[in-house]
Image (cartoon, rainbow, N blue to C red; front, top):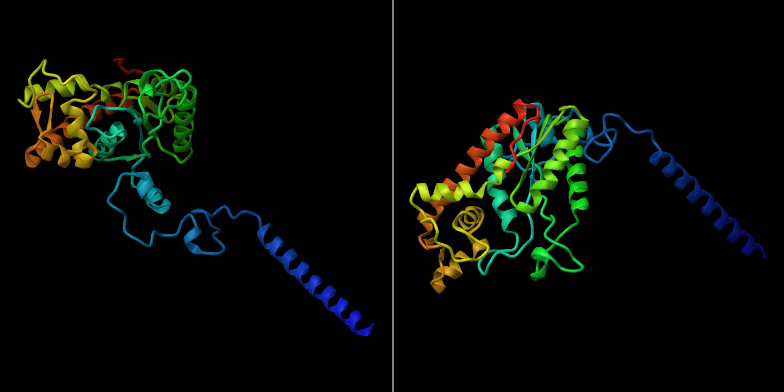
Length: 309
């Protein structure tokens, strides 16, 4: 009986100690928030969690938000990078040579080129899921395997929340560019709605001039790369292929096509890697220059005047 009593007392004391420790831990977790805290931690626990702690590393050579730390973004914005670009791509079929993420690969080159040419801009992560057709019944690009789609309302909701997030962090100009035709109406609607709601602070604007593939194809004719009227009749063209090539030749199966003797599109030979690289860079530069001009005009007009295409 005595042994049992001592055992029971020992267990009770252990439980009491555990309860006190748990209560103390709970009290620690219930500390009031520190307004200096940033970066996902508490400023009181580590100075790297404090809003005004200097960045311990040099700034990276990138314009992509997802490749930056929170300190990188903070410092970039303080240095004047207060324009954010939201780009929308898609997952859709593009003939026998191009990866389904065609538009996203194009934007990887183009958003970066636009941001660097502006000098005061950063690129938000590419929104890759966009309206591509209906699911039941399957319509548009959804009739082809591999396509992914979202409802128009979903697309506009994601855009709205992304723009709102950037506004919350203090970006003064938020630019929407879309590399696919089905993205244009939703972007325009979101930009006009938010720009009106916030009265141009920040400026939110859709840039239809970015999605002007006709001008890119004309440019390729002007510089002697392609001949007008020549077509392979697939969902592909030299402007798209070479823009993707600039990001990653593997996305257009360049090496395999060269080996198979299939390295042409609409009569344009892309087998010469050095020549293809040169033309690809010209395409990116052409599109970036055209887009930057439109962006600057739109910002100057506070987003109130945009063209439609």
